[in-house]
Image 1 (cartoon, rainbow, N blue to C red):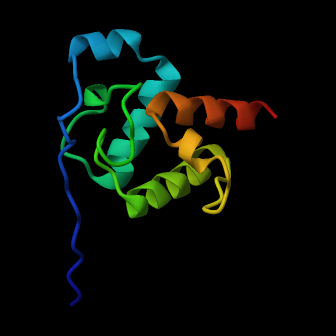
Image 2 (image 1 turned 90 degrees about the vertical axis):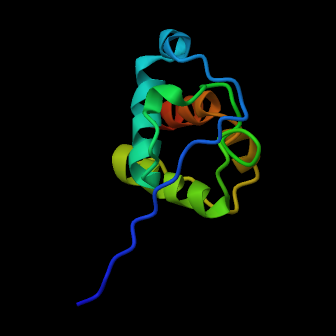
Length: 110
């Protein structure tokens, strides 16, 4: 029998989280994407804790490059949007939940 290790992490709260205020400024599409991120990465915190304007990578949400790849895979499966690991605009795409959502919505509309 092989044991499967499930990684659970908490969101880095060094960035401002305003609880209910974050929910008020997060669009339905952003909330859905935040829920996908929480699910894909097994985060302990609810999706509403993610500030849509905070950085996803590094100092903001505290994600690393492997996390970003996992998000790209989850986005691809859910929305059919391919985000190549060598794309020149990845830094911009993953700069925040809001920018990732904008990219996803633009690609879905194309």
